[in-house]
Each structure stands twice: as C-alpha cells, then as structure tokens.
Length: 276
Ligand SMILES: [Zn+2]
Image (cartoon, rainbow, N blue to C red; front, side, top):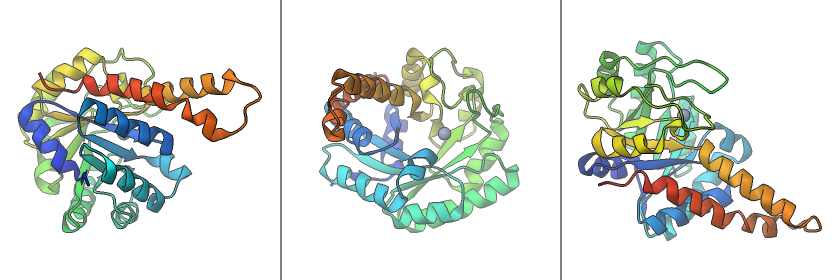
C-alpha cells in the first residue's frame, strides 16, 4: 500500500530539489494511465479531483478509485481534492478517504481566507490529512484575470494557517493550451525568501518545460498542477480511437486505445520534474 499524504511527498521534494506532479483526473482511464506513468518513471504522483471531475463522479466514488490505484501502486500516490470551495466539500473528501485537501479561499479577503483555511487545515490534520491553501488568485485563460501573490501576505498566510502547501499566483494561469507563459521568477524568489512551506503552481500546463525543470530543482516550488496538457493528449487519443473504426461502438474497446498515448504524454510531463 502506497497511499500517502501530500506532506509525505512534498517534504522530500523540498529537501532534495525536485517537484511532484499534481495530475488533474477526469475518470478511470486517465487516473490509471497516470499511475502507470509514475511507476514507469519511479516517481510519486498526486491524483487530483477538481470541480469538473466531481461534477461527473461523486467524491466517495473518486476516493475509492484513488485508493484502489494507490494500494496496488509501486510508487507513493496522494489522493487529493483540488479546489475545494467549502468546509463541507473538504469534510466529504476526508470522509471519502482522500489524504489531502486543497481549500481555495483565494477569491476571499485575506483575513477570511486565512480564517477559513486555518479551520480546514486543523480539521485535515486531526484526520491525518494534508491541506493546501491558495494566496493570491490564479486566473483562468479566457476568464477571470489573476491577482499576483504578495510576499508579505504569503508569509502571513503560511504562518497563520499551518498549511502543508501553498498555491501562489506568479504569472501562472489555468487552462492554458500553449507553454508560452513563463513565470515571474523575481516574485517567486521574494515569496520563498519569507516562507518554508512548499509552493504550488496551478496552471502548470502553461509553464515552459525548461522553466518547470529549473524551478523544480532550484526553488521551493514542489508541486506543479498539470491538467490541460494531458486532457489534450487524452482527447487526441480518444478522437483517433473513435475515428479508427466507424463500426465500433463498444466504449471499453475504444477507451483502451487511449491508455498508451496518455501514459507516454504523462511520462514526458513527469520527467521534467525530476531532480538533477
Ligand atoms: Zn487550480
């Protein structure tokens, strides 16, 4: 059994200079491929259930799926709730067997974000579960704009919430389909100078691969969330499989053909986060 908490994988990453991928899952096919890729690369992996995943499959079911994969895996696997928006949602995730919850209070005023995140971190820790918070606001491609993380606020947030990981806004944007963004290194340096908490980059798909590697090895960024890049790989593989035979209607037969391409794409993502 290799089910572990977020803290269990991020503290060694912080110490030894690498990062762990937080992979956005949408269903059985992609989560299974992600674990196979992590085993092939011999690295830990964080399986994440975000809002669109939960809209499709209830949290108690996702908890079972993540735990089933983790228990059979040869590498450490974290069962993580991504963007929990309420105390209730985080409570349900913990009751469903998740080993890590992210509470996203980043749209709230600082004091309220700190108070609510601290309460969820306390609940999570009492259950032996990790907690990720977000300070600053990471926007969405084609949607809400970002609000960059202020280093002083980050230091205050880290010390007053007792989170195990802190998501920051440093030029990263959710749902980017190209890798031309690039992160604000000066802001990252200013934030990591004032906190010891492992840092998290949401919207990792938009970060150039060379910068992912450099930051994994040489900064306190220990977790990159990757969703869009692998969703695109899955979508492409599915389209190819569907179009390969117009007579075919059995979805298991079709979905089987997404496995190898998604494993290959995931392996390339994981390789970039390895240490020197
Ligand atoms: Zn996010």
